[in-house]
Length: 227
Ligand SMILES: Nc1nc2c(ncn2[C@@H]2O[C@H](COP(=O)(O)OP(=O)(O)O)[C@@H](O)[C@H]2O)c(=O)[nH]1
Ligand SMILES: [Mg+2]
Image (cartoon, rainbow, N blue to C red; front, side, top):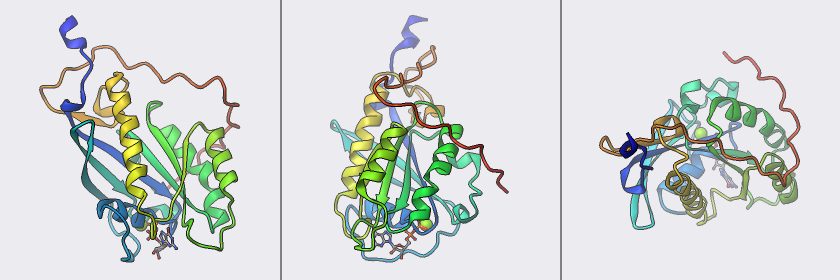
């Protein structure tokens, strides 16, 4: 069945799932709305009620790629996010607030959840949000060093004032598209839904190689019970 081993291409992509996690109040909903509005939003969004997923189409290499982006529903306050929320994600944005030390300290717990509940192919972006505020307590260097240690991409943003949120998403989608074209995200399990007639890989995608240049990340603490 060699014909079935063809790698799916971007034209076969029906939708890509991306999720946003992080402590309550770090700006997840504001960042998502900023992206959906295509730039800065001055609106304020209250605590999210009910799990929200929003769809936006981005254009990569002349292809329209539909993204489904899931925002938490306030349950992050009690760290009670369901496994379904994490399941089948191509990418995760893990936010902290640069003016809130606790939200940065809690990144390790969020990463533990993300790494235990998603695939090794899932892209992770750590985002230090609220960079517009002068009351910053977490330095850019600290955020960068943390992301390096866990082999994640790092960005600082202002979900209130930045036009660059769109760029953050576009860079991420380009990275996901590269993985699709390398055959690393062949099924819905990897966060990419394909059109019904898309070719299917019969072989499992290989795990992404770990970078030998980066120091091993310290062992993550045991997962905490939830709900
Ligand atoms: N100054 C500033 N405020 C922000 C930023 N992002 C979000 N906020 C504010 O932080 C509060 C919590 O934001 P929200 O998006 O609801 O956080 P969530 O609980 O993580 O979804 C709101 O009052 C937002 O207006 C930012 O980048 N800069
Ligand atoms: Mg919210």
